[in-house]
Image 1 (tube, rainbow, N blue to C red):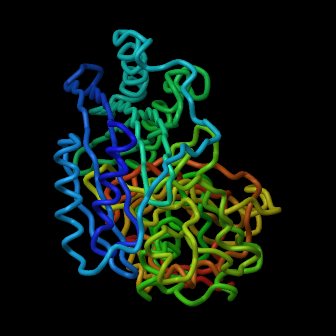
Image 2: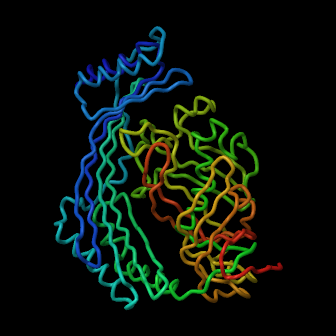
Image 3: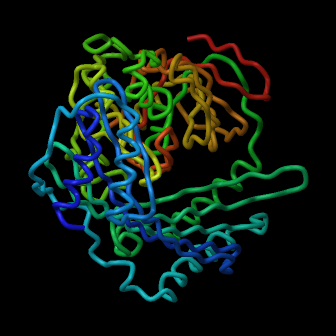
Length: 467
């Protein structure tokens, strides 16, 4: 589409007094392969293609989208959307200029250059290693997904932002079973890189072996006791507790409506002095990164909490209006079918000064949560519960027996104040984050941390811990 046609559409959207208009074009090609016990059970490709139009008028916003991206149809859509407002034109766009980016996250070995047989062979090797670990491994699922998302954003600020994002991820699940019991072990490494990620950066066979080891270990584990106790949460995916219980509460979509426990607390203590937390969409090759966010702002490294003090929120342009703050590169969406809003990218707690070994040694009794699973959280109150996929008791400063069925129950605000030790082994891992603007790739992460007291649910009897 020619620039003049883009200008026509942006200006048509502003005809009834809108003070901002935006076009979001997307073309995403995806590929998914599923293996069950080494056999390909599913292979599919897809293409998401279309455009979304958004208009602001002060504190109001309207959004619409179409997979017909012809000039005629998008002009019609813009005219339909502007009828949501009444008023005279206050803005006309006359120029559009490309905003340069850092051009990060480029794949070194594009997936399209690697034969499908070579990709499937790598997945089969991993599946075989996992399946052969123990006779009680009854099933191994390997899911491999790749997508390349190309976006172009035009807005009434006169900006053109273009970004290309190629992501690949492999999720391995090992299922162990014995009469009356079943346990799983799973891991899903991914990156905004090409096929080199799976050849140079990680070893899928080692990851597959670890998945089966966890499943077998938890299959034979005792039930976890319940009660208030110290909990050591390991690095990597342990960061999901900060992401869910705290991170969502720092997004402007909640803060601007006073639906977050962190609303109005900027500049106040919200955590212990040793806690520093960040959201960084600029990390080259990271799962949640981008050169631009989904409203055309450059991504940023944003410190959210500094020495326990809340210093920043994650802000998109629209919700930032109610907060009197500009967008800081934190606006994201699943596709053009979703209106974008403030979302996390790569969110993590920063390194501390202890070591993992020192934290364990300093714990008289407690739970070592090596891996967390699914959970639920209420952003308005911060109340949460999370399943522990892999857990062990800590007794007299030593990790002892594995325990299963543990659940962490607490409040995001309280947990931050109860963190009393942080290790220096920061690790980020990958997940998909669901919210109002759809499901998006996001890194979670942290070093090993200790929460000095948290309620642990379990069916292995109640304990009374005495410090």
